[in-house]
Image (tube, rainbow, N blue to C red; front, side, top):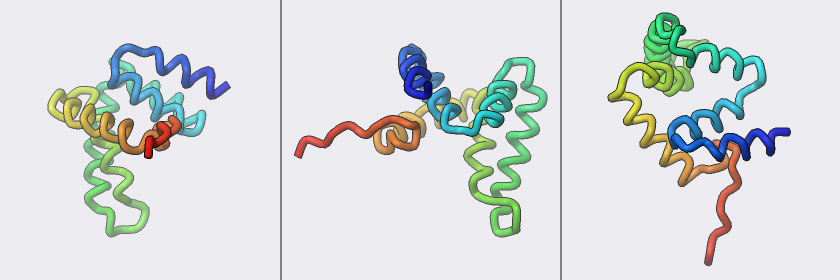
Length: 113
């Protein structure tokens, strides 16, 4: 089932959307539906404050409950609406896909040594 979904995602022409969908597929099923809801254009007014709150929480990583995991998540949420952040996340996602394909649920290409 997951392999079929990965093959379907790999046919997406937009590189950014394909990479994000691969990451979303790695989440638990309940989190996937929440992320899909947050990515809708109508959810902009929830997405922006949530992204800012997550970034602020990431900066408070020395406190319990908060952590650095909040920082990239907040940036990804804000990148939906802020073009400068969208360009940065595109570059970061391209790097992850090239260097750490397992993080996206892909198999690493066989090395030719």
